[in-house]
Length: 81
Image (cartoon, rainbow, N blue to C red):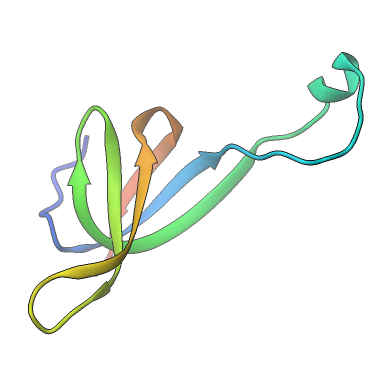
């Protein structure tokens, strides 16, 4: 885990879970590719359980629109300048 200070802007590369309403066989289910996403925001948490981002920083120091990404889905956390 990179040491990035909490509250600083970051970009997180992560593998998202997804679903669809179509019918398919077990073989067709194997053919899906990974859904890799990039999310950026203010780092609120980074530990063994999760990475959490705040999308907006309020004038009083709080954050809103919080995204919790389970650690097992995280590929990389990169600090932004």
